[in-house]
Image (cartoon, rainbow, N blue to C red; front, side, top):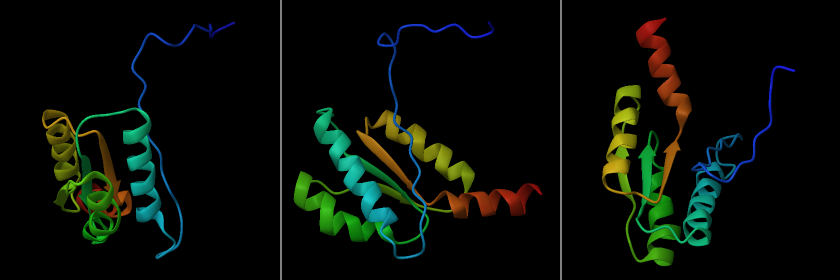
Length: 116
């Protein structure tokens, strides 16, 4: 047998999820609801981070994040992979509770244009 099972519970778990749907179907809204729920359920200190390749960050900040947390989103607007990587590093430095990248489609398109 090539794989052996081990007991989990000694490491750090990270949630990484993706949402798929048509334009206007609620992906940004749903991702933000998830982020707020994770932050609340796990009692995480820190703010919500948002890497915005479109314009949804301002919308969910006003409608969801600010009313529920009393704090604005910490965000960045770009469509490049290098900025997305820098965003994650900055979120770690600033101890962001949950980070949202919306959307990876634009980042992937930028990578394809640059490297393919």
